[in-house]
Length: 450
Image (cartoon, rainbow, N blue to C red; front, side, top):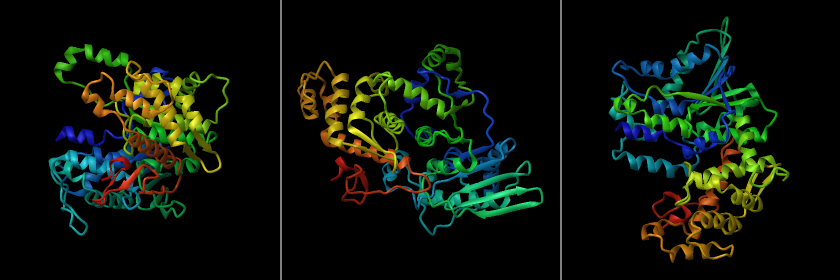
């Protein structure tokens, strides 16, 4: 059960990407960051929460798992924003990932609208399963938000707390009391991990406390769109370099003792990370080549999502190292088949051209011993792979033209979703985004519809 709990919040992009980026340089890791505004992904805190025997009331649970976290940040930060998912507005395409998580749990927790919550948190074993039920989880978030907005007391005055859930409640703790307002300018939004963008202009420098790796890419896209905005930092689990991982494997005593130590964190300067990764990409096309910065960041995110995220699948038999090592063919191909409208911040992909250039290049490079055709045609590449000496298992795992079409449309939709600020995305389930509603009324990838 604990193994499942860990995998639940191993969300976001392929975990190999941060390791690959660190190989390009670690200047984007900040040793000492003093930021007056902190954004906490409360959804992650909820998924990481544990129930103790002392949690005999919901107040005690909230105090230990949420109030104490906010209070620690308020010691040095003036403003703390805690955000949660609002399931009424979460994009329907997220149900693909939600269904996968529920399927992996092997034990569905039954709770529906109108059911009464228990008077106190259930046992840890039940809690893990209950957090896979959205109705239960939404009720719990309502309790957390209510207790925080009504009972939280900061360790010092002249501070602000914002709870961003269905609406945004701002509480300013003054020397002579408190002032509470609902922030009418904040539109209803779904996922917690995209909400931070609407606070940067308001509070300038912002540190995002979230282990969800999607946040790094969302922040990078934001920083590219708003280069003059304040500093944007992300506090997340520390990424170990390949050298550090090797040293840990050699430390047999520590492995035998089972002592992995407490989780370590690090803070990333997103602007510096963007510049380092852009520099690596420019080596693939020549430093003199003029490129729109926003298109370049979108291409970077596109390459990253080729290895999967919550909304898209990874390319079959293609890993992070394969993508990064083949930037010299991937980046030029994507520059030719993509466009970026700086007025609307819309990133578009010529899907057919992308399949018959970039996808051809990737699979031709990775399986160069088996691809004989020289034409820019994915059908020919797939035919070569089907007729090759690869094992039957590998052949069955290869993509189809239709699955590649769906994947490209999925990724294009994700990038444009992550470019939105203070609003939710349009979700067309007819296939234009690579998602459809199947005969069982479920959201599925377009090539999987029955």
